[in-house]
Amino acid sequence: MRTALLAMVIVLLPAVLFANPTIGVYFTYNAGQMHYSPMANEMFDAYVYAQSANCYLNGAEFEICYPPGILEIGWEVPEGSLTLGGPPDVGISIVYWPPMDGWNPGYNLLCTLHLMALSACVSEGGTLSDAPLSMYPHHETGLIQGSCWPENYLFEFTGLKSLICPSCVSVQETNWGAIKSLF
Image 1: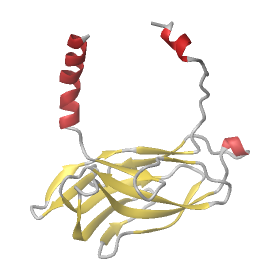
Image 2: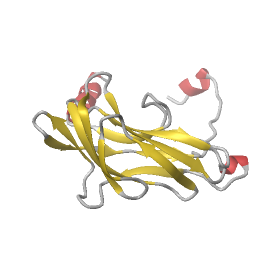
Image 3: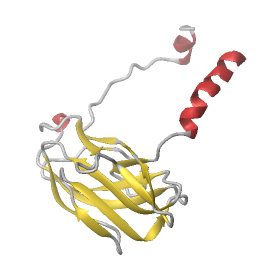
Image 4: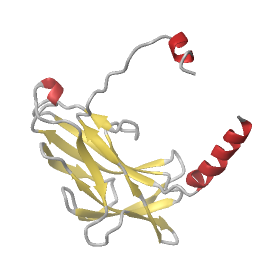
């Protein structure tokens, strides 16, 4: 048992140490929830966050692709930012001044998206089901990247995918004794 645990630590340690910073769309203001189930014609906000940048982030470049049935009404960047391009389905480059602290609290709000669902979820009688809201590389550079101040070196983000109207998967209820009998 101890050998298996040690082997798992050795195998997983490089993945943790060399993990890329991530960028994704969240539906709560603190980079927590990556799924949302809107009603028909509901207007809602989505937040693009960078996580684990571990530097003073002064720029980001990415592209957001919206699923059918989701309409972008507008978007905002933090005060003092300068943008080139913009969503939907168009690459966006944003520079931030002053640079954002990538260590504390560990995530940075890059922009806020104002969206509208043209249909409800399938569970509510609509047509949306497992609709992905995805981060893609900028169409001109082919990268999802950030810039760190003051050196202005570039690094790559790993783009995440959020779901609008995620499908529900039922689970079977059982007791602890039945689970222990499996082993």
